[in-house]
Amino acid sequence: MEFKDLDPILHSQLRLAVISLLMQQQEADFIFIREKTNATAGNLSVQLNKLREAGYIEVHKQFLNNYPQTVCKITPAGQHAFHQYVAALQSYLIIRQQ
Image (cartoon, rainbow, N blue to C red; front, top):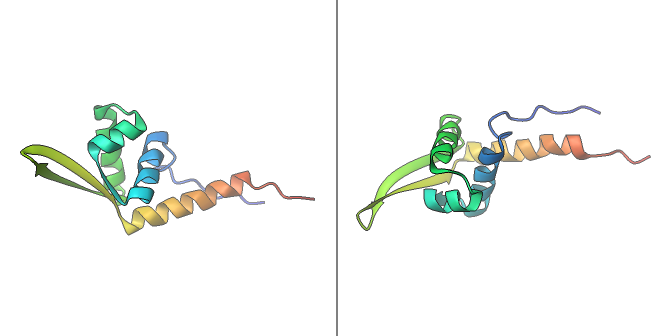
């Protein structure tokens, strides 16, 4: 049995949670992500930056009713990385039947 490498970007609990949310929603604003993950604003900002730098998400800053809004959207690379991560994780979980 061969174990596949796990993507270190997605192997963080918070970054994996963010990508998992975005796989379902395609895009979500910062407040929604923060509430769903129970992350602090500062930690979430740092982790979103890492996902953005890896090319897994796009971050758009805009205004909504005169208030700043940050919207995150998963990229095709992020979707691919998530699928690869799940496949790699499955290689650790599959127990061969005898």
